[in-house]
Image (cartoon, rainbow, N blue to C red; front, side, top):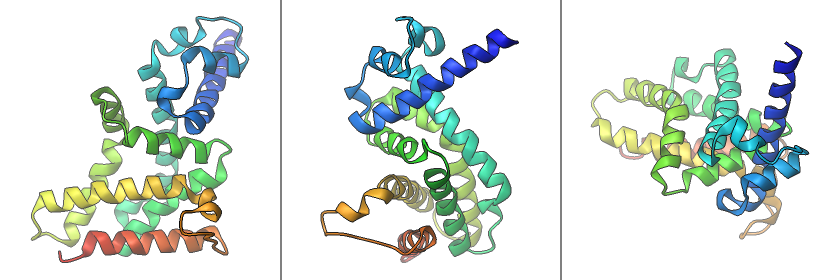
Length: 207
């Protein structure tokens, strides 16, 4: 059991190093070897042993994010919201909680944001594999509010909404240095409210 625990500790350090480096330098800007060195691993083959490849590592990162997101959803399930405003606000709040509560949270959401911008089919498949359940639940719930709207229109708006949430929250701590000047909010909830209002407007416009 101690050996297994040691292996899991090493694996977690590698994932955290990867999250930090990918957030700083981009997915294509970091080698597996650099991640291993950054984590303090002495074995040059440690990355291949634990993940097999970069895609395996990205899958492990997504798995970590989704596991924590699922715990937050269990406590505050957005799919049970009684209206679209509450549904979107709870979805944004869950992502915002990951960013603010966990030391690795903001970097992890930045990695997700980078992955969403990738055109690689393999990387898109990783996103779909781990995030599909959350996306489908959001689509299904919104569809109950708009039963007469053509499904593809709602699916597209859900996709754009999730992209906006992830990209928006990945930059939450960089708003003081934005292209339009300094943006500041009194607290996290104010940012969640502003982002939620923007997304609700986009989803519901002319439905």
